[in-house]
Amino acid sequence: MTKIGTPLTSVGKKALLCGSGELGKEVAIELQRYGVEVVALDRYENAPAMQVANKSYTLSMLDGEKLRSIIETEKPDHIIPEVEAIATPALVALEKEGYNVTPNANAALLTMNREGIRRLAAETLGLPTSRYVFADTYEDFRKGIDTVGIPCVVKPIMSSSGHGQSTVKCEADIDKAWKEAQEGGRAGAGRVIVEAFVDFDYEITLLTVRHCAGTTLLEPVGHHQVSGDYRESWQPQPMSPAAIEKARDIATKITGALGGYGIFGVEMFIKGDNVIFSEVSPRPHDTGMVTMISQDLSEFALHARALLGLPVPSVRFYGPSASKAIVVEGESDKVEFGNLEKVLEEPGVQIRLFGKPEVHGHRRMGVILATDETVEKALEKAERAYAKLEVKVL
Image (cartoon, rainbow, N blue to C red; front, side):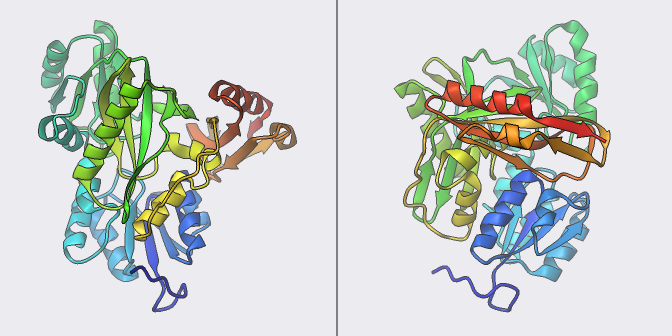
């Protein structure tokens, strides 16, 4: 039986977020709705979730000793990874000592490393995936490209949001892809995966919730990415009955193998009725931000509910919806958003500004949400709202 006592007392519940970006911020808010104390960790100060948490720490979460020290000091009831760049061996050791990691330390370990999750999916579970080769050196990388063929996609085995990812379309792209993968990995230079380019009609994220009463699969989320980084998403993505059945089967199998309670973002490529597994994140997914307007329980509310050991009897889907990322370019710690009254003048439009403290190069700083009679109309509405937004990098 789940019990939650008065926050900030000996009978209260405490959650520690490993990662405090925009996704962690929404999880923190949802946990606080249940009276849970939230401690937020990230590599930089004033990260979005830190701004709403009860307490925060700034550290590199790849520093296992410092991470362990904070966890031993705070003694959280729940440790919640929000990013891949975490000293997961430390989480594995802490879980063995009795700490509760969401969904579990092994899932965080496997999914932080593309090799772990790809081998689980393809070699252990027999799920359909693209052809792939792992490489540690430039020489092995070149051999991997010869094996897989051109075009192909190159990614660091540890990265997220498209960092270090590129597509090799011709011989001239090979050296550039290697350099980008070595510079873009979350854990620095090292091992990469070379994947055969998949011919697909569209790609989806199938948000899957494992909770104490079973597994709940949400309406499929379609999305558009630029260099592996999400730009727009929509729900529901139209799919054939055969494709949705296969996608649900894959999502159920991969999340069942990972285990634990919480939400998983299962990414897949769809070609006609065929479905190919791509990746899975054992946490809320950036493309799933559309659920903040499309459902009565967002992916963040579902994550909080599940990890607290509470059931999800049903999820009410409101209707066709879309999200559009607000990407800011420049170099500054002062960004101003204007003309908001025009952005929000149409019914069925919402905006979330994440409160990130600075931008260097380009950074996702907010999201526009829209709902309408069809997905196409929702996307058009989000685009109209985005066009009205004024962004100043001061």
